[in-house]
Amino acid sequence: MIFSARTKYIIVAIIGMFISCSAYSIERNPKNNFKTTFLSFYTGSAKLTYERALFNKQSIEITAGYIGVGYDSFNVQPKGALFRLAYKFIFSPNQNVLTGFYLKPEFAYSEFGYNCVDKNLAYAKYSTGNSNTRGRSCMGTLMACAGYQMAKNILVFDAFVGAGFGIGNDAEIQYHHGFIERYKHLTLTFGVKVGIGF
Image (cartoon, rainbow, N blue to C red; front, side, top):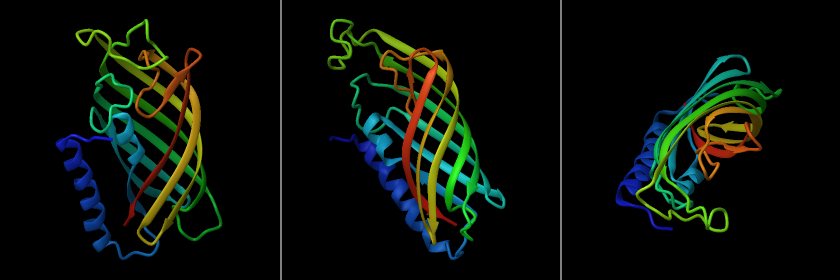
Protein backbone atom coordinates (compact mmCIF):
# COMPACT_ATOMS: atom_id res chain seq x y z
CA MET A 1 0.00 0.00 0.00
CA ILE A 2 1.54 3.30 -1.13
CA PHE A 3 0.31 6.62 0.27
CA SER A 4 0.99 10.00 -1.29
CA ALA A 5 2.88 12.66 0.67
CA ARG A 6 -0.38 14.57 1.25
CA THR A 7 -2.07 11.48 2.66
CA LYS A 8 0.85 10.83 5.03
CA TYR A 9 0.57 14.42 6.33
CA ILE A 10 -3.15 13.95 6.97
CA ILE A 11 -2.56 10.69 8.86
CA VAL A 12 0.19 12.30 10.97
CA ALA A 13 -2.06 15.32 11.67
CA ILE A 14 -4.92 13.08 12.86
CA ILE A 15 -2.61 11.07 15.12
CA GLY A 16 -1.08 14.30 16.44
CA MET A 17 -4.56 15.66 17.19
CA PHE A 18 -5.42 12.54 19.19
CA ILE A 19 -2.19 12.76 21.19
CA SER A 20 -2.51 16.47 21.91
CA CYS A 21 -6.19 16.23 22.87
CA SER A 22 -5.49 13.29 25.18
CA ALA A 23 -3.11 15.46 27.19
CA TYR A 24 -6.10 17.63 28.15
CA SER A 25 -8.55 14.79 28.63
CA ILE A 26 -8.69 14.28 32.38
CA GLU A 27 -12.40 13.61 32.69
CA ARG A 28 -13.23 10.00 33.58
CA ASN A 29 -16.67 10.16 31.96
CA PRO A 30 -16.14 12.17 28.75
CA LYS A 31 -19.14 13.72 27.04
CA ASN A 32 -17.36 14.46 23.74
CA ASN A 33 -15.16 12.50 21.39
CA PHE A 34 -13.34 12.72 18.09
CA LYS A 35 -13.13 9.54 15.99
CA THR A 36 -11.79 8.51 12.64
CA THR A 37 -12.32 5.49 10.40
CA PHE A 38 -8.79 4.39 9.59
CA LEU A 39 -10.01 1.69 7.19
CA SER A 40 -11.47 4.45 5.00
CA PHE A 41 -7.91 5.35 3.93
CA TYR A 42 -7.82 1.99 2.15
CA THR A 43 -10.78 3.01 -0.04
CA GLY A 44 -9.62 6.54 -0.82
CA SER A 45 -11.20 8.83 1.77
CA ALA A 46 -10.51 10.43 5.15
CA LYS A 47 -13.30 10.88 7.71
CA LEU A 48 -13.44 12.72 11.04
CA THR A 49 -16.39 12.34 13.43
CA TYR A 50 -17.35 14.54 16.37
CA GLU A 51 -19.79 13.15 18.95
CA ARG A 52 -21.43 15.08 21.81
CA ALA A 53 -23.63 13.68 24.60
CA LEU A 54 -26.82 15.76 24.77
CA PHE A 55 -28.87 13.92 27.38
CA ASN A 56 -28.34 10.80 29.47
CA LYS A 57 -27.64 7.98 26.99
CA GLN A 58 -28.32 10.12 23.91
CA SER A 59 -25.85 11.86 21.64
CA ILE A 60 -25.45 13.54 18.28
CA GLU A 61 -22.74 12.55 15.81
CA ILE A 62 -21.44 14.62 12.88
CA THR A 63 -18.98 13.28 10.28
CA ALA A 64 -17.21 15.15 7.51
CA GLY A 65 -14.83 13.64 5.00
CA TYR A 66 -12.67 14.29 1.99
CA ILE A 67 -12.79 11.79 -0.86
CA GLY A 68 -9.52 11.47 -2.77
CA VAL A 69 -6.83 10.65 -0.18
CA GLY A 70 -5.38 7.30 0.81
CA TYR A 71 -5.12 4.15 -1.25
CA ASP A 72 -7.39 4.06 -4.31
CA SER A 73 -8.41 0.40 -4.03
CA PHE A 74 -11.01 0.69 -6.82
CA ASN A 75 -8.54 2.45 -9.17
CA VAL A 76 -11.04 5.16 -10.17
CA GLN A 77 -9.30 8.30 -8.78
CA PRO A 78 -12.27 9.73 -6.82
CA LYS A 79 -12.43 13.40 -5.77
CA GLY A 80 -15.18 14.85 -3.61
CA ALA A 81 -16.66 15.16 -0.12
CA LEU A 82 -19.04 13.43 2.26
CA PHE A 83 -21.24 14.31 5.24
CA ARG A 84 -23.06 12.21 7.86
CA LEU A 85 -25.41 13.14 10.70
CA ALA A 86 -26.70 10.68 13.30
CA TYR A 87 -28.61 10.68 16.60
CA LYS A 88 -27.70 7.87 19.02
CA PHE A 89 -29.87 6.12 21.60
CA ILE A 90 -27.51 4.21 23.92
CA PHE A 91 -28.76 1.19 25.91
CA SER A 92 -26.47 0.28 28.80
CA PRO A 93 -26.45 0.35 32.62
CA ASN A 94 -22.84 1.55 32.42
CA GLN A 95 -22.28 4.90 34.16
CA ASN A 96 -20.29 6.20 31.21
CA VAL A 97 -22.76 8.19 29.11
CA LEU A 98 -21.19 7.20 25.77
CA THR A 99 -20.61 3.48 26.41
CA GLY A 100 -22.94 0.67 25.39
CA PHE A 101 -25.03 -0.84 22.61
CA TYR A 102 -26.90 1.73 20.57
CA LEU A 103 -29.37 2.40 17.77
CA LYS A 104 -29.07 5.45 15.55
CA PRO A 105 -30.94 6.88 12.59
CA GLU A 106 -28.33 8.33 10.24
CA PHE A 107 -28.38 10.54 7.16
CA ALA A 108 -25.37 10.25 4.84
CA TYR A 109 -24.53 12.18 1.68
CA SER A 110 -21.57 11.92 -0.69
CA GLU A 111 -20.67 13.70 -3.89
CA PHE A 112 -17.61 12.86 -5.97
CA GLY A 113 -16.20 12.50 -9.45
CA TYR A 114 -14.44 9.34 -10.59
CA ASN A 115 -12.94 7.67 -13.65
CA CYS A 116 -15.57 5.55 -15.38
CA VAL A 117 -15.12 1.79 -15.33
CA ASP A 118 -14.22 -0.05 -18.54
CA LYS A 119 -17.47 -1.88 -19.36
CA ASN A 120 -15.55 -4.85 -20.79
CA LEU A 121 -13.74 -5.41 -17.49
CA ALA A 122 -16.37 -4.15 -15.04
CA TYR A 123 -16.55 -6.10 -11.79
CA ALA A 124 -14.05 -8.70 -12.99
CA LYS A 125 -11.34 -6.25 -11.96
CA TYR A 126 -11.90 -2.54 -11.51
CA SER A 127 -10.18 -0.64 -14.30
CA THR A 128 -10.25 3.00 -15.32
CA GLY A 129 -10.31 2.12 -19.02
CA ASN A 130 -10.59 5.56 -20.61
CA SER A 131 -9.08 7.94 -18.03
CA ASN A 132 -10.57 10.94 -19.92
CA THR A 133 -14.12 9.82 -19.08
CA ARG A 134 -15.24 11.10 -15.67
CA GLY A 135 -18.45 10.11 -13.97
CA ARG A 136 -20.15 11.96 -11.12
CA SER A 137 -22.05 10.54 -8.16
CA CYS A 138 -24.35 12.53 -5.84
CA MET A 139 -26.25 10.31 -3.46
CA GLY A 140 -28.00 10.56 -0.09
CA THR A 141 -29.38 7.87 2.18
CA LEU A 142 -31.33 7.52 5.41
CA MET A 143 -30.24 4.45 7.38
CA ALA A 144 -31.05 2.62 10.60
CA CYS A 145 -27.82 1.55 12.32
CA ALA A 146 -26.93 -0.55 15.34
CA GLY A 147 -23.60 -0.82 17.08
CA TYR A 148 -21.50 -0.89 20.21
CA GLN A 149 -19.31 1.89 21.54
CA MET A 150 -16.78 1.67 24.35
CA ALA A 151 -15.51 4.92 25.86
CA LYS A 152 -13.00 4.26 28.63
CA ASN A 153 -10.96 7.15 29.98
CA ILE A 154 -9.72 8.76 26.76
CA LEU A 155 -10.00 5.75 24.42
CA VAL A 156 -13.09 5.37 22.21
CA PHE A 157 -13.92 2.32 20.10
CA ASP A 158 -17.08 2.22 17.95
CA ALA A 159 -18.32 -0.59 15.64
CA PHE A 160 -21.58 -0.44 13.70
CA VAL A 161 -23.70 -1.87 10.86
CA GLY A 162 -26.77 -0.48 9.15
CA ALA A 163 -29.15 -0.47 6.19
CA GLY A 164 -31.47 2.04 4.62
CA PHE A 165 -32.96 3.71 1.56
CA GLY A 166 -30.91 5.88 -0.80
CA ILE A 167 -31.66 8.14 -3.73
CA GLY A 168 -29.48 9.98 -6.21
CA ASN A 169 -26.97 9.32 -8.95
CA ASP A 170 -25.28 6.00 -8.19
CA ALA A 171 -21.57 5.43 -8.83
CA GLU A 172 -20.67 2.61 -11.22
CA ILE A 173 -18.68 0.85 -8.51
CA GLN A 174 -21.67 1.19 -6.10
CA TYR A 175 -19.37 2.40 -3.30
CA HIS A 176 -20.11 5.88 -1.92
CA HIS A 177 -17.35 6.25 0.70
CA GLY A 178 -19.38 5.37 3.74
CA PHE A 179 -22.13 3.22 2.27
CA ILE A 180 -22.81 0.99 -0.72
CA GLU A 181 -25.93 0.74 -2.85
CA ARG A 182 -27.43 -2.64 -3.75
CA TYR A 183 -30.61 -3.68 -5.58
CA LYS A 184 -31.90 -0.18 -6.49
CA HIS A 185 -32.03 2.12 -3.47
CA LEU A 186 -31.01 -0.38 -0.76
CA THR A 187 -27.96 1.02 1.05
CA LEU A 188 -25.68 -0.83 3.46
CA THR A 189 -23.01 0.45 5.81
CA PHE A 190 -20.56 -0.91 8.39
CA GLY A 191 -17.43 0.40 10.02
CA VAL A 192 -15.07 0.66 12.95
CA LYS A 193 -14.05 4.01 14.41
CA VAL A 194 -11.36 4.75 16.97
CA GLY A 195 -10.65 8.00 18.73
CA ILE A 196 -10.31 9.98 21.95
CA GLY A 197 -12.82 11.27 24.47
CA PHE A 198 -12.69 14.53 26.36
